[in-house]
Length: 225
Image 1: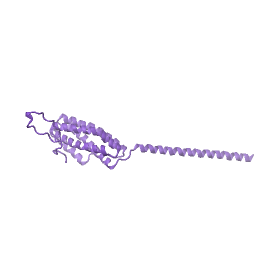
Image 2 (image 1 turned 60 degrees about the vertical axis):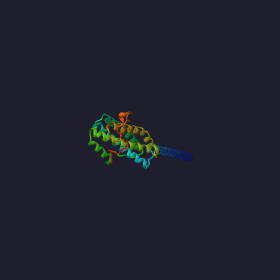
Image 3 (image 1 turned 60 degrees about the horizontal axis):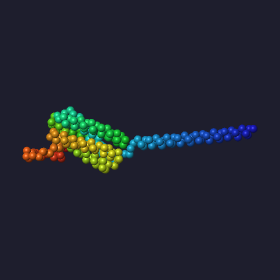
Image 4 (image 1 turned 30 degrees about the vertical axis):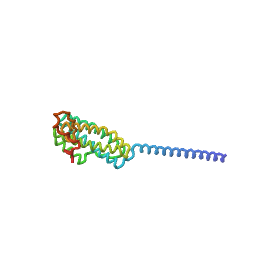
């Protein structure tokens, strides 16, 4: 009788031990899967890091966008021409939107963008803040033509040869707006007599023989240093 009880006890202990081992294995597998899933989720939250050239493009775009917003606000306050005021407000609206998109892209790429203008761009803002009326209109619009010529060229390069797909696609999406800005800047500059402005060709006729030639869009007059 004693032997039977001992055998039964051993069997119960064996079954209990087996169940405990199985439970531990299930728990280990569950933790492993949880860690793998968490790792996959974290890896999806941050995109691949952009190249140094893409980073440089993002930095320049961020500073340039901030400057466009600051100068646009000045234009709405200090310009004499309604066309210049309207152009300035368009810069505030469009570049604020582009800046927000770039900040979101930078966050996904773990890229830290500047939050304030550097000295060169702040000097531009300070220079224009001292002007008003027609003088402001001419200087601001001349600067806008030059800036957007440079912007279009830089965004075209990034759209054509950028290494990071997301940054490249953002440049492609933003390009049409920048090209439109350049056209608007040239037309508005022409209206206020600023360097770089586009002037409509004179109508044919004897009275136009002595008309002054149109201002060259690539003139260096009033360009920033």
